[in-house]
Image (tube, rainbow, N blue to C red):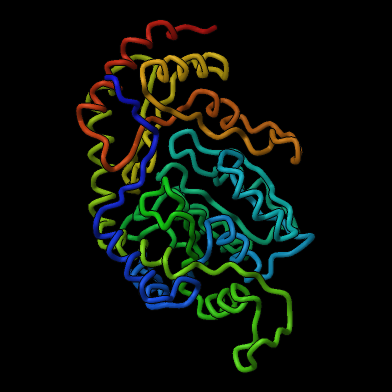
Length: 371
């Protein structure tokens, strides 16, 4: 195949063009306009919550949720060691300390037993991450949170529409946070959302999002706030994407099925795992190889690229970053170097997936041993 197959491309159709053009021609191009309220309402309904608060990106969604909950300096927030850096960065921005704990090897989500061991008198919240579209073990996490009176903030940046039982992620904890970056299941270019059933938390988020301006006295500010608002143009794109969200989620399941059909019986590899209590959304197709390490994984990815196939590595353990304390999380450190993500975007074709799978099968025999 001569044309390069990227890891991700947003799906933008004439519908999205029409919505954004309407926002532009209306003159409401900043953080006011009809699409802001419409997007929030539609996303809240989709998630099954009372409130959805739009923000400028997924990172500030986490930070704003933490700030609105009163998380501050001296507090601790427990997060998984395997996640994108934004999860930890937002905790640090709140002044609190991120406490890294290990993951489960099947869900790639935070391990409940590791959470329990990490709780201290300073712990105020747990932040599970629904990594790569696979839900974390929320029932066990909520039991622990209830026992120790802790807040639960779901980082659902990569998991729009994923289910635990009949409940969508983002509706299960005290709050959920989402990203609408260009590679997410639905996109607003940049952008994010906080979801919650808590009326007071909703109101607090909305005040802090808009410079903490007094509701009854314009341009009066009793405290410091943030400019975390989404624009009407972004929300217009989001409204168009919401009309297609079922289609976008269903296509990712089809893409996984295409990969799985060809790779399920290949020795030494496994794809996204499943269980009987959750329904993932396959934001990214995951491939783990038994014998990969950082060096051999990079060689494999280089060979894929030489064959016009893009890929990306699993996230590095956050605790290994120079600004954080290095700790040993056994499962995280075992898995992170063994995993890659394969092209997963709405308009990928079965022919392209077939080519990717055949290339993988051709290359793998050179990696079926320890190096």
